[in-house]
Length: 206
Image (cartoon, rainbow, N blue to C red; front, side, top):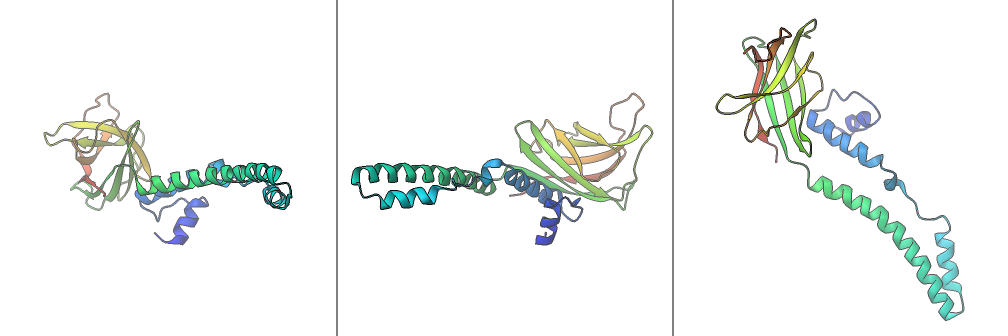
């Protein structure tokens, strides 16, 4: 992604030119920049207090004043430094993430997409973006699944149109490595119809 794409997304653009993984990275950066501690400034009179302490002729009073001034300044610097280190450490140790390139089946040969699965405390956050699938409404919808090697399906969410969809899974891609999307009908039967329109194997991104 280009710098212009990043700036546009942080400024409120819809981010259609970015992949789900890139949008997630920018969302993390936006959250870090919005934290009040990232913009804390030292007291405005810090410099004056330090200069005054140095100019003080009384050695004992000078030492105490200088010490207090330096401690106050150091505390402000350490607070900002702590936020910076925290953001840097998070960037250096990203969360566990899987991804998949999705291909259309015979039911949707022109469909393509990509998906990222990011491990969080609450489960696996899934970000899906695909093209070539028409919108489904009026009791018709799409459903996403994770499938294990034995063919057991776990539903991870439903949607009408696969544009920047966020889903959640309670099972990891390590045990259910295949991601699929089916066409469904709200007819009282929650089971998969077997009408798969997108599918792809997941893999670890690092």
